[in-house]
Every structure is written in structure tokens, then in C-alpha cells.
Image (cartoon, rainbow, N blue to C red; front, top):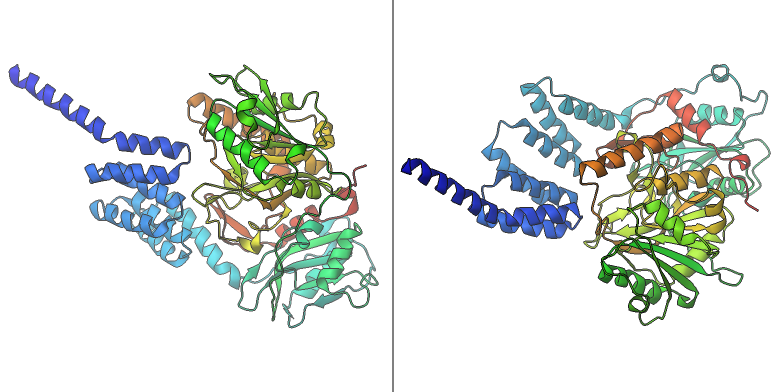
Length: 581
């Protein structure tokens, strides 16, 4: 009996010691939950100094290193884990994923092949292998021929004449180019363009037609076709397309690489916001918060410090149940900003909190922002005024960075992982410009995050604000942007407005089972409401392949049917973009 009691006491002592030793692991998990990834790495590493053989924490550390882009370190640590457990195929799969993320698809394919050799029924390896092979073969795949007009039912224009196909100097057309361009003009398009290769075979995959995308495109199309008698003397590819878009003509994009450019010069990638020509309008800035007073003060002070006209900012802080009620004078700071605190003691409902803040206020521009941010751009307020002074633009979002320098938000792309929206450029290095420089230039986006979303008050009233009934927490910002797009208003990702954002610093991600169920429910509501419109993104070329959360993991070859569907679905014309009064 004494021996049994002694063994039990030793076991309890060991459990207590293990619990103390795992404190660093628990702190790492908490930091990771709130996206403090550098802090999570430090906690995990400190824990492993005490317990170097803790396999689970080593594996978590591999995951966080991947998330922050330290792939070489993640791979080195993973190799040590594989040496300890060489027969665990899930570790080999992670190794393959890291190679794939690092751009070495051939090495990743070899690892997946080894996994399939040991386990032919491994669906993960089989699917990944098929995707990688498709991406590797896309560059050599034959282009599909254009379909006969009779196969399209209606929309074709008989006897419209041969199109005029022009190229930039040194550009060589592929054999299939003339047929596809002629097909597009016969469908009623005034102008059509396609994708191309650069001088060193860099792929330039264009977005769907939009004048504000072409205006900042660093690698505009190298070849285009125009309807007879449209092109003016001296107009080139870019100028002809810009005039067609400006006039509201029907413009079509063919998602096929139909040319190779001989001499490619990178054009400027920024579009400075024009300063308002009329009297600058007041901005209403709405910031929901709960506790987190120090983070809120940083955000409010940065707005005033970097504003061109801080005296024209009206800031409403929505206090959603802080334990110590917020005071206006504690937030006003050196810039003496106009701050109002609206106390709302209700369960958290992001949409409702923002809607309530707008009641009884009539500022022409409303900015919805999180409390865990810090403005980094000089004269951000005048930049917003200039962008929203454009009658085509209804919503503006910003470039958001984590405090460790990784990109958190470069716009939102529809139809990403499992058909759900994804943040464009999520957790890439801030210096990475992205395909077609999409992460560092102002351009149209299908949606932007509500972490920092500016909109015209007239548009906000037209769509009756955010959906506080069906989308109270996580999807109302995307829904709002889709509503704006349905009214012909452009959603603009403004890369020149930049902020630090500790994503979900105060609330964390959906963590409890109830929060996760609500997030899933809202996502289903969003996707069901918008149907086909939520399944694709006209600002992301359909040849791009998604793997995991990576939206540009490789290129896939399209069928003729897919090319036709994209071209006709995303065509730009005046009727799709009415001018607001």
C-alpha cells in the first residue's frame, strides 16, 4: 500500500513539474491565438530549452515559423523531428508543403511521390501531387482554340468586320491569338486584351477590365484587338484600352497568354490621390472598443498626428462594455481631436455597433476602424477625400501590416480556400510586391476588411449599413463591399494608406465552440446570399491556382469553356458601372 501511495505521489509531482515546465508552451499558444507570432516563437523556444524533447511544441514551433515566413528555420527544425520519427508520413507531408511554399515544386513532388509509394491511399499527397504537376505543365500546355460562335447561343455579331490587332514594340503573338481576339470582337466587344509573357518568360496575368486597374498596372497588356474604326491614329495598346474603358465601351479580357513581350519597361505602380478641389469635407471615424485603453489611445493619437486636417476629424468611440468607462478627455491627446464616446452595453455585434455610431451624424465620409491599429501614412485623410471624390469609387480600404512587418491585408479575394474569402497577400513579407505589384499599388478589389474601411455616407445609407441581424460579427464588411459593387461602385484597395494592425488583438479569433459555430454560420449566409458572385474574383486571374491559403501558388491551364465564361462574365461596359448622381 505504501509503495502504491509513493508511486502516486511521484506521479503527481511529475505532473505538477510538467505543468510548470509547460508554462512557456501555454504562453506561446496564447500569443499565437492573438497573432503575436514573434512572441509565440520566443515562448516556444524558451520552453524547449527546458524540455528539448517536447515533440508537440517543436511541431507547433515549425508551424509558427512557417506563418512568419521563416521557412528555412522551419525546414531545419522539421528535419530533426523527421529523424526522430522517420515513419510518420504527416511530417513528410509538412516537409513537402514547406518546399512548395518556398517555390521548389519539384522537390515537393518527389516527397509526395515517396509518401504515395508507402501509402497509395493518401488523398492529401495525391491531390497535392496533381496540383503541382498541373502547375508545372501549365507553361507547356497547348492553348485551347476559340469556340465557334454558334456554340454560344446568342450575343454574337455577324459581319462586324475584322478586328484591328495591335501590339507593343517587339511583341510576338502566339498562333492562337488572332482567332481568340476575333472571337471576342464578334461577341460585341469594342476592345479585347489578353495575358502575356515578359522578356524572360515572366507571366503577366491580368485582372478583369477596369479603368482604375489599368491606370496603375505596372505591366499593361502587350497586345489588344479593337473593333473596326475605333482606334484613333497614334493610339497604342494602353491608350486605346484606357479610352474604351473611359467611354464605357464593352471591353473583354481573355485569360490566356497570347503574346510574348520583347522589351518590357516597368511603369510606376502608385496612383497618388488627387486632392479634393472643393472644400474639404469632415470625416467621421468610428472605432468600437472594449477596455484596451492604451491600444485605443495609440490609434486615436496616430490618426491626429498623421492627418492633414485633424480639425476635420470627428471620432466616435463605441464603448462596448468596458469595465472602466472611457472618458473623452483621456483620448483627446495633443491634437485636441473631436471625440465622442458612445456607451453600448450589449453583446458584441460589430455591425450594430458601427451602425449605431452613424445615427444622427451626417459627415459625407465614414471611416470604420479597429482599436488595435496605428496609422503610418502622412495626410491619410486627404488621400481618402481624393479617392472618394471620384464618382466611381464608393469604398476604400488600406494596406495593413502586422507589427513584425508581415502583410496582414492587401485586399480581400473571393472564392479562395474552400470557396471562402481570403486576405490577399496574407503574411507575406512587406517588401514582396506580389503578382502585378498588387500588394503595393492602388487598384480595384472585390472587398476590403472592416478593420479599416472608408465609404461615402450616401452609399452607406443606400445599402442600409451593415447587416446586424444575419452578419453580426465576421462577414458584414465583405457583404457591404459586394452590395457596393452591385450598385456599380468600385471598391478600392489603397496601398498608399498604410497602418499597423494587431489583428483580433482584443477579441482573438473564434475560439469557443459557440464563436466557431457563429463564424461558420455567417460564412454560409454570405456565400448563400451572393451565390456565383462569391465564388470568383474578377480582380484575380482565373489561371492562378490556390493551395491552402496561398492564392498564387501556381498556374493552371484553362479550357475554352472556362475562358469564355470568364470573358463574358467579367466584361466591362457602361451599363455595369452606372454613374451615381
